[in-house]
Image (tube, rainbow, N blue to C red):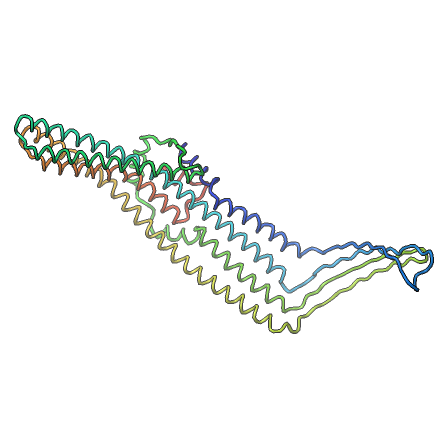
Length: 410
Protein backbone atom coordinates (compact mmCIF):
# COMPACT_ATOMS: atom_id res chain seq x y z
CA UNK A 1 0.00 0.00 0.00
CA UNK A 2 1.46 3.35 -0.99
CA UNK A 3 0.91 6.58 0.89
CA UNK A 4 -1.89 7.91 -1.35
CA UNK A 5 -3.83 4.66 -0.96
CA UNK A 6 -3.27 4.71 2.78
CA UNK A 7 -4.63 8.27 3.06
CA UNK A 8 -7.73 7.40 1.01
CA UNK A 9 -8.33 4.33 3.12
CA UNK A 10 -7.99 6.34 6.35
CA UNK A 11 -10.42 9.01 5.13
CA UNK A 12 -13.05 6.48 4.12
CA UNK A 13 -12.71 4.39 7.28
CA UNK A 14 -12.60 7.18 9.85
CA UNK A 15 -15.95 7.53 11.73
CA UNK A 16 -15.45 11.28 12.28
CA UNK A 17 -15.33 12.03 8.55
CA UNK A 18 -18.36 9.83 7.92
CA UNK A 19 -20.32 11.55 10.70
CA UNK A 20 -19.35 14.98 9.35
CA UNK A 21 -20.59 13.98 5.91
CA UNK A 22 -23.93 12.86 7.37
CA UNK A 23 -24.29 16.15 9.26
CA UNK A 24 -23.78 18.02 6.00
CA UNK A 25 -26.39 15.86 4.28
CA UNK A 26 -28.89 16.60 7.06
CA UNK A 27 -28.24 20.32 6.80
CA UNK A 28 -28.85 20.22 3.04
CA UNK A 29 -32.37 19.01 3.83
CA UNK A 30 -32.81 21.87 6.31
CA UNK A 31 -31.88 24.30 3.55
CA UNK A 32 -34.60 22.73 1.41
CA UNK A 33 -37.08 23.14 4.25
CA UNK A 34 -36.19 26.83 4.58
CA UNK A 35 -36.51 27.35 0.82
CA UNK A 36 -40.00 25.79 0.82
CA UNK A 37 -41.31 28.86 2.68
CA UNK A 38 -41.19 30.76 -0.63
CA UNK A 39 -43.81 28.47 -2.20
CA UNK A 40 -47.57 28.42 -1.61
CA UNK A 41 -49.23 25.58 0.27
CA UNK A 42 -52.16 23.62 -1.13
CA UNK A 43 -54.52 21.44 0.94
CA UNK A 44 -57.44 19.26 -0.13
CA UNK A 45 -60.26 18.23 2.23
CA UNK A 46 -63.01 15.64 1.73
CA UNK A 47 -65.70 14.76 4.26
CA UNK A 48 -68.98 12.90 4.48
CA UNK A 49 -71.54 13.39 7.23
CA UNK A 50 -75.06 12.43 8.24
CA UNK A 51 -77.52 14.25 10.51
CA UNK A 52 -79.25 12.64 13.49
CA UNK A 53 -82.10 13.65 15.74
CA UNK A 54 -85.04 15.95 15.06
CA UNK A 55 -83.24 17.90 12.33
CA UNK A 56 -82.60 14.81 10.28
CA UNK A 57 -84.78 14.30 7.21
CA UNK A 58 -86.21 10.81 6.81
CA UNK A 59 -84.43 8.89 4.07
CA UNK A 60 -81.92 11.70 3.35
CA UNK A 61 -78.57 10.72 1.91
CA UNK A 62 -75.35 11.69 3.70
CA UNK A 63 -73.92 15.15 2.99
CA UNK A 64 -70.56 15.35 1.24
CA UNK A 65 -68.06 18.21 1.21
CA UNK A 66 -65.05 18.74 -1.03
CA UNK A 67 -62.72 21.70 -0.39
CA UNK A 68 -59.46 23.03 -1.75
CA UNK A 69 -57.48 25.72 0.10
CA UNK A 70 -54.21 27.50 -0.55
CA UNK A 71 -52.00 29.97 1.32
CA UNK A 72 -49.03 31.99 0.11
CA UNK A 73 -46.86 34.24 2.24
CA UNK A 74 -46.18 37.19 -0.04
CA UNK A 75 -44.04 39.42 2.16
CA UNK A 76 -42.52 39.17 5.63
CA UNK A 77 -39.86 41.90 5.59
CA UNK A 78 -36.95 39.49 5.03
CA UNK A 79 -37.82 36.79 7.54
CA UNK A 80 -37.73 33.95 5.02
CA UNK A 81 -34.58 35.30 3.41
CA UNK A 82 -32.83 35.52 6.76
CA UNK A 83 -33.89 31.99 7.70
CA UNK A 84 -32.66 30.63 4.38
CA UNK A 85 -29.36 32.51 4.74
CA UNK A 86 -28.91 31.09 8.24
CA UNK A 87 -29.38 27.50 7.08
CA UNK A 88 -27.08 28.02 4.08
CA UNK A 89 -24.34 29.56 6.22
CA UNK A 90 -24.70 26.70 8.68
CA UNK A 91 -24.32 24.27 5.78
CA UNK A 92 -21.18 26.07 4.64
CA UNK A 93 -19.81 25.88 8.20
CA UNK A 94 -20.48 22.14 8.36
CA UNK A 95 -18.81 21.60 4.99
CA UNK A 96 -15.78 23.59 6.10
CA UNK A 97 -15.67 21.55 9.30
CA UNK A 98 -15.83 18.42 7.18
CA UNK A 99 -12.78 19.68 5.28
CA UNK A 100 -11.03 20.35 8.58
CA UNK A 101 -11.67 16.84 9.84
CA UNK A 102 -10.54 15.36 6.53
CA UNK A 103 -7.30 17.32 6.69
CA UNK A 104 -6.65 16.24 10.28
CA UNK A 105 -7.33 12.60 9.41
CA UNK A 106 -5.04 12.84 6.36
CA UNK A 107 -2.32 14.49 8.45
CA UNK A 108 -2.64 11.82 11.14
CA UNK A 109 -2.41 9.14 8.46
CA UNK A 110 0.76 10.66 7.00
CA UNK A 111 2.34 11.06 10.42
CA UNK A 112 1.47 7.46 11.34
CA UNK A 113 2.97 6.34 8.03
CA UNK A 114 6.27 8.15 8.62
CA UNK A 115 6.33 7.22 12.31
CA UNK A 116 6.20 3.56 11.28
CA UNK A 117 8.98 4.06 8.75
CA UNK A 118 10.98 5.92 11.37
CA UNK A 119 10.45 3.07 13.84
CA UNK A 120 11.72 0.63 11.22
CA UNK A 121 14.77 2.80 10.63
CA UNK A 122 15.48 2.86 14.37
CA UNK A 123 15.33 -0.94 14.45
CA UNK A 124 17.86 -1.06 11.62
CA UNK A 125 20.11 1.39 13.46
CA UNK A 126 19.81 -0.62 16.69
CA UNK A 127 20.70 -3.81 14.82
CA UNK A 128 23.77 -2.08 13.39
CA UNK A 129 24.76 -0.93 16.88
CA UNK A 130 24.34 -4.49 18.15
CA UNK A 131 26.65 -5.74 15.42
CA UNK A 132 29.26 -3.15 16.39
CA UNK A 133 28.95 -4.16 20.06
CA UNK A 134 29.46 -7.81 19.11
CA UNK A 135 32.66 -6.90 17.25
CA UNK A 136 33.91 -4.94 20.25
CA UNK A 137 33.12 -7.80 22.64
CA UNK A 138 34.86 -10.25 20.31
CA UNK A 139 37.95 -8.04 20.20
CA UNK A 140 37.95 -7.72 24.01
CA UNK A 141 37.78 -11.50 24.43
CA UNK A 142 40.63 -12.05 21.99
CA UNK A 143 42.81 -9.51 23.77
CA UNK A 144 42.01 -11.00 27.14
CA UNK A 145 42.91 -14.47 25.89
CA UNK A 146 46.36 -13.36 24.76
CA UNK A 147 46.93 -11.46 27.98
CA UNK A 148 46.96 -7.87 26.70
CA UNK A 149 43.58 -6.95 28.24
CA UNK A 150 42.03 -7.43 31.62
CA UNK A 151 38.95 -9.36 32.61
CA UNK A 152 37.36 -6.00 33.44
CA UNK A 153 37.66 -4.93 29.78
CA UNK A 154 35.89 -8.07 28.66
CA UNK A 155 33.08 -7.56 31.18
CA UNK A 156 32.61 -3.94 30.11
CA UNK A 157 32.36 -5.04 26.48
CA UNK A 158 29.83 -7.73 27.42
CA UNK A 159 27.81 -5.13 29.34
CA UNK A 160 27.75 -2.84 26.30
CA UNK A 161 26.67 -5.81 24.18
CA UNK A 162 23.81 -6.61 26.56
CA UNK A 163 22.70 -2.97 26.49
CA UNK A 164 22.71 -3.01 22.68
CA UNK A 165 20.53 -6.13 22.72
CA UNK A 166 18.12 -4.42 25.15
CA UNK A 167 17.88 -1.34 22.94
CA UNK A 168 17.13 -3.51 19.92
CA UNK A 169 14.34 -5.26 21.83
CA UNK A 170 12.88 -1.88 22.79
CA UNK A 171 13.06 -0.61 19.20
CA UNK A 172 11.36 -3.76 17.93
CA UNK A 173 8.57 -3.23 20.47
CA UNK A 174 8.16 0.35 19.26
CA UNK A 175 7.97 -0.90 15.68
CA UNK A 176 5.24 -3.40 16.61
CA UNK A 177 3.29 -0.68 18.45
CA UNK A 178 3.51 1.68 15.45
CA UNK A 179 2.32 -1.13 13.17
CA UNK A 180 -0.81 -1.53 15.31
CA UNK A 181 -1.40 2.21 15.26
CA UNK A 182 -0.99 2.22 11.49
CA UNK A 183 -3.63 -0.50 11.12
CA UNK A 184 -6.10 1.33 13.39
CA UNK A 185 -5.69 4.57 11.43
CA UNK A 186 -6.54 2.68 8.24
CA UNK A 187 -9.65 1.20 9.86
CA UNK A 188 -8.29 -2.34 10.29
CA UNK A 189 -7.88 -4.42 13.47
CA UNK A 190 -4.64 -3.67 15.30
CA UNK A 191 -3.14 -7.05 14.43
CA UNK A 192 -3.50 -6.47 10.67
CA UNK A 193 -0.18 -6.38 8.84
CA UNK A 194 0.09 -3.50 6.34
CA UNK A 195 2.97 -3.66 3.92
CA UNK A 196 4.18 -0.17 3.07
CA UNK A 197 5.24 0.64 -0.46
CA UNK A 198 8.23 2.87 0.28
CA UNK A 199 11.47 2.79 -1.68
CA UNK A 200 14.91 3.82 -0.50
CA UNK A 201 15.12 6.25 -3.44
CA UNK A 202 12.39 8.30 -1.78
CA UNK A 203 14.81 9.12 1.03
CA UNK A 204 16.95 10.93 -1.53
CA UNK A 205 13.86 12.84 -2.64
CA UNK A 206 13.27 13.89 0.95
CA UNK A 207 16.87 15.09 1.10
CA UNK A 208 16.40 17.18 -2.03
CA UNK A 209 13.20 18.71 -0.70
CA UNK A 210 14.95 19.60 2.53
CA UNK A 211 17.54 21.60 0.58
CA UNK A 212 14.83 23.87 -0.87
CA UNK A 213 13.84 27.02 0.96
CA UNK A 214 10.39 26.92 2.63
CA UNK A 215 7.76 29.52 1.70
CA UNK A 216 7.89 32.92 3.33
CA UNK A 217 6.30 32.97 6.77
CA UNK A 218 4.27 36.10 6.00
CA UNK A 219 2.86 34.47 2.88
CA UNK A 220 1.81 31.38 4.84
CA UNK A 221 0.22 33.54 7.53
CA UNK A 222 -1.88 35.33 4.91
CA UNK A 223 -2.91 32.09 3.23
CA UNK A 224 -3.91 30.52 6.53
CA UNK A 225 -6.27 33.40 7.35
CA UNK A 226 -8.20 32.75 4.14
CA UNK A 227 -7.87 28.99 3.65
CA UNK A 228 -7.92 27.31 7.05
CA UNK A 229 -11.16 25.27 7.20
CA UNK A 230 -11.74 25.89 10.91
CA UNK A 231 -11.47 29.64 10.33
CA UNK A 232 -13.82 29.45 7.35
CA UNK A 233 -16.29 27.40 9.39
CA UNK A 234 -16.30 29.93 12.22
CA UNK A 235 -16.82 32.82 9.79
CA UNK A 236 -19.84 30.99 8.38
CA UNK A 237 -21.18 30.40 11.89
CA UNK A 238 -20.84 34.12 12.55
CA UNK A 239 -22.75 34.88 9.35
CA UNK A 240 -25.43 32.37 10.36
CA UNK A 241 -25.85 34.06 13.75
CA UNK A 242 -26.29 37.42 12.00
CA UNK A 243 -28.95 35.91 9.73
CA UNK A 244 -30.69 34.47 12.78
CA UNK A 245 -30.69 37.94 14.33
CA UNK A 246 -32.28 39.32 11.16
CA UNK A 247 -34.90 36.55 11.16
CA UNK A 248 -35.93 37.30 14.73
CA UNK A 249 -36.13 41.02 13.99
CA UNK A 250 -38.44 40.30 11.03
CA UNK A 251 -40.90 38.55 13.37
CA UNK A 252 -41.83 41.93 14.84
CA UNK A 253 -42.73 43.34 11.42
CA UNK A 254 -45.96 42.90 9.43
CA UNK A 255 -46.53 39.95 7.13
CA UNK A 256 -48.78 39.73 4.08
CA UNK A 257 -50.52 36.46 3.18
CA UNK A 258 -52.75 35.55 0.25
CA UNK A 259 -55.26 32.76 0.87
CA UNK A 260 -57.88 31.14 -1.38
CA UNK A 261 -60.53 28.52 -0.62
CA UNK A 262 -63.10 26.74 -2.78
CA UNK A 263 -65.64 24.17 -1.53
CA UNK A 264 -68.58 22.11 -2.73
CA UNK A 265 -71.31 20.82 -0.38
CA UNK A 266 -73.79 18.28 -1.72
CA UNK A 267 -76.71 16.13 -0.66
CA UNK A 268 -79.78 14.83 -2.46
CA UNK A 269 -81.75 18.00 -1.84
CA UNK A 270 -79.19 20.74 -2.56
CA UNK A 271 -75.78 21.58 -3.86
CA UNK A 272 -73.75 24.60 -2.81
CA UNK A 273 -70.51 25.69 -4.43
CA UNK A 274 -68.49 28.64 -3.27
CA UNK A 275 -65.06 30.02 -2.46
CA UNK A 276 -63.13 32.82 -0.83
CA UNK A 277 -60.08 34.91 -1.74
CA UNK A 278 -58.43 36.92 1.02
CA UNK A 279 -55.38 39.13 1.49
CA UNK A 280 -54.39 39.19 5.15
CA UNK A 281 -51.94 41.52 6.88
CA UNK A 282 -50.69 40.52 10.32
CA UNK A 283 -48.81 42.78 12.73
CA UNK A 284 -47.64 41.44 16.12
CA UNK A 285 -48.54 44.02 18.76
CA UNK A 286 -47.53 42.42 22.05
CA UNK A 287 -45.82 39.08 22.75
CA UNK A 288 -45.21 39.39 26.47
CA UNK A 289 -41.76 40.92 25.87
CA UNK A 290 -40.71 37.70 24.17
CA UNK A 291 -39.52 39.53 21.08
CA UNK A 292 -37.22 41.77 23.07
CA UNK A 293 -35.62 38.82 24.83
CA UNK A 294 -35.24 36.91 21.57
CA UNK A 295 -33.45 39.89 20.01
CA UNK A 296 -31.14 40.21 23.01
CA UNK A 297 -30.39 36.48 22.96
CA UNK A 298 -29.58 36.47 19.23
CA UNK A 299 -27.35 39.53 19.61
CA UNK A 300 -25.48 37.89 22.49
CA UNK A 301 -24.97 34.69 20.51
CA UNK A 302 -23.61 36.69 17.59
CA UNK A 303 -21.12 38.40 19.92
CA UNK A 304 -20.02 35.00 21.20
CA UNK A 305 -19.36 33.83 17.65
CA UNK A 306 -17.38 37.00 16.94
CA UNK A 307 -15.19 36.43 20.00
CA UNK A 308 -14.65 32.81 18.95
CA UNK A 309 -13.60 33.99 15.49
CA UNK A 310 -10.93 36.21 17.04
CA UNK A 311 -9.67 33.32 19.15
CA UNK A 312 -9.40 30.99 16.14
CA UNK A 313 -7.57 33.67 14.14
CA UNK A 314 -4.98 33.92 16.88
CA UNK A 315 -4.71 30.14 17.12
CA UNK A 316 -4.23 29.83 13.36
CA UNK A 317 -1.42 32.36 13.48
CA UNK A 318 0.25 30.42 16.29
CA UNK A 319 -0.18 27.10 14.47
CA UNK A 320 1.57 28.44 11.36
CA UNK A 321 4.38 29.95 13.43
CA UNK A 322 5.05 26.72 15.35
CA UNK A 323 4.82 24.52 12.24
CA UNK A 324 7.17 26.83 10.32
CA UNK A 325 9.73 26.70 13.12
CA UNK A 326 9.37 22.93 13.32
CA UNK A 327 10.02 22.60 9.59
CA UNK A 328 13.15 24.77 9.76
CA UNK A 329 14.42 22.72 12.68
CA UNK A 330 13.77 19.47 10.79
CA UNK A 331 15.61 20.83 7.71
CA UNK A 332 18.63 21.77 9.80
CA UNK A 333 18.64 18.38 11.54
CA UNK A 334 19.10 16.55 8.23
CA UNK A 335 22.39 18.30 7.47
CA UNK A 336 23.50 18.05 11.08
CA UNK A 337 22.78 14.32 11.34
CA UNK A 338 24.59 13.65 8.04
CA UNK A 339 27.73 15.26 9.44
CA UNK A 340 27.24 13.62 12.83
CA UNK A 341 26.91 10.14 11.34
CA UNK A 342 30.01 10.57 9.15
CA UNK A 343 32.11 11.76 12.06
CA UNK A 344 30.81 9.12 14.48
CA UNK A 345 31.40 6.31 11.96
CA UNK A 346 35.01 7.35 11.38
CA UNK A 347 35.60 7.80 15.10
CA UNK A 348 34.23 4.35 15.91
CA UNK A 349 36.25 2.72 13.14
CA UNK A 350 39.47 4.39 14.29
CA UNK A 351 38.90 3.60 17.97
CA UNK A 352 38.18 -0.07 17.26
CA UNK A 353 41.22 -0.36 14.98
CA UNK A 354 43.51 1.19 17.61
CA UNK A 355 42.08 -1.13 20.26
CA UNK A 356 42.65 -4.21 18.14
CA UNK A 357 46.19 -3.06 17.48
CA UNK A 358 46.82 -2.62 21.20
CA UNK A 359 47.20 1.16 20.98
CA UNK A 360 43.91 2.24 22.56
CA UNK A 361 41.77 1.38 25.55
CA UNK A 362 38.30 -0.08 25.74
CA UNK A 363 36.76 3.08 27.22
CA UNK A 364 37.51 5.00 24.01
CA UNK A 365 35.94 2.21 21.95
CA UNK A 366 32.78 2.10 24.04
CA UNK A 367 32.44 5.88 23.95
CA UNK A 368 32.84 5.95 20.17
CA UNK A 369 30.40 3.06 19.85
CA UNK A 370 27.80 4.86 21.98
CA UNK A 371 28.21 8.04 19.93
CA UNK A 372 27.77 6.07 16.72
CA UNK A 373 24.59 4.42 18.00
CA UNK A 374 23.10 7.80 18.89
CA UNK A 375 24.13 9.24 15.52
CA UNK A 376 22.51 6.34 13.69
CA UNK A 377 19.26 6.84 15.60
CA UNK A 378 19.22 10.58 14.85
CA UNK A 379 20.07 10.04 11.19
CA UNK A 380 17.41 7.36 10.80
CA UNK A 381 14.57 9.61 11.94
CA UNK A 382 15.63 13.03 10.63
CA UNK A 383 14.24 12.63 7.08
CA UNK A 384 10.94 11.19 8.24
CA UNK A 385 10.61 13.97 10.82
CA UNK A 386 11.13 16.48 8.01
CA UNK A 387 8.38 14.88 5.92
CA UNK A 388 5.94 15.03 8.85
CA UNK A 389 6.90 18.64 9.61
CA UNK A 390 6.32 19.58 5.99
CA UNK A 391 2.80 18.16 6.06
CA UNK A 392 2.10 19.82 9.41
CA UNK A 393 3.00 23.20 7.94
CA UNK A 394 0.75 22.54 4.94
CA UNK A 395 -2.15 21.72 7.25
CA UNK A 396 -1.53 24.72 9.49
CA UNK A 397 -1.45 27.02 6.44
CA UNK A 398 -4.66 25.62 4.94
CA UNK A 399 -2.83 24.15 1.95
CA UNK A 400 -3.50 20.51 2.74
CA UNK A 401 -6.54 19.86 0.55
CA UNK A 402 -7.48 16.42 -0.64
CA UNK A 403 -6.88 17.13 -4.34
CA UNK A 404 -3.39 18.44 -3.60
CA UNK A 405 -2.41 15.93 -0.94
CA UNK A 406 0.03 14.13 -3.19
CA UNK A 407 1.71 17.43 -3.99
CA UNK A 408 2.29 18.18 -0.34
CA UNK A 409 4.23 15.06 0.57
CA UNK A 410 6.96 13.07 -1.15
